[in-house]
Each structure stands twice: as C-alpha cells, then as structure tokens.
Image 1 (cartoon, rainbow, N blue to C red):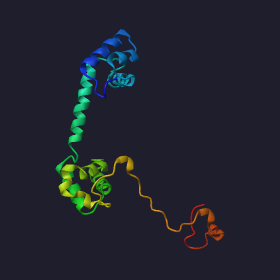
Image 2: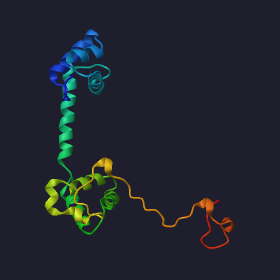
Image 3: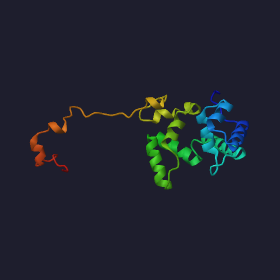
Length: 179
C-alpha cells in the first residue's frame, strides 16, 4: 500500500478507464497499490450522477483544495471583526460572549467561537498575550482530547431520595416545585 498521499491525475485517469471497462473497485485498488476504501471514497466524492470522469474529478479536487486554502487563510474575516474581537477580549469578554453579541448585531453567525480561541493561541499572536484576557488565562491550549467541561459539585449535597417527608408537602418557602 502507498503511504497516505492524495490521488493524482494519472491515477484518476486509470480509475476512470478501469471503471468504464467494468473492473471492480477492489481490483482497481490492487492495481494502483491503494486501499479499497481510498478508491471507493474517490469515486463517491468525485462522481457526477453516478459517472466518474477523471477530468471532472480532478477539477472538483482542485476546487476543494483551493477553497480549503482560502478558508484557512482568514481567521478573523474583516478589520471590523478583528478590532471588535480584540476590544471585547480586553474588556474581559469570553469568545462565546463575543460571538453571541456579533450574532445579535449582524443577525446571523459571522464566525465561530472556536475561531476566536484558535486566533488567540496562534503562534503569530503570542506577543499580543491575548490568552491573559481569557477566564482560565492558559498560555497553551490543551489538546482537543484532553479538554473537558469543568463540573463543580454542590458541597454537602443530599440526594433527593434522602430528603425529609415534610418537604413533599411544599408548605415552607424553598420547598416549592413542580410535581
């Protein structure tokens, strides 16, 4: 099997040619020294109306690559969003609060709070020390799999099942509720 590399135009030609001949996906994968799933994914991703054409597949692939490069280039889309975000961060707002206010003012989602966090922790922005304005003030960001929600437990809590029976009557203030 090949190391993880993208399927190139020559391989796309071979896939199209062999599919037209009626050769199975597993045989095409063997011939190209690729995994069966790679070839199958390529066909599903780049077929048009169930027909795989190599030139169209290459064009689709190039477009996806170009769009991905464009999306990754802009972290905070405009000068307004950039300055607004920096201003609100310095006032102690969380990225979630900034996003909520932007949604209210623009009427639709402009950016994601994750974009703001990644902007804060980018190596290029290290000298701005934006992480100091966050609640937890962490210089480095934890890996995605290590992040967890902080759960604060109620101290000396008592289970609902162990409460007094007079609470069920709801005669005192604080014992009200829905039954």
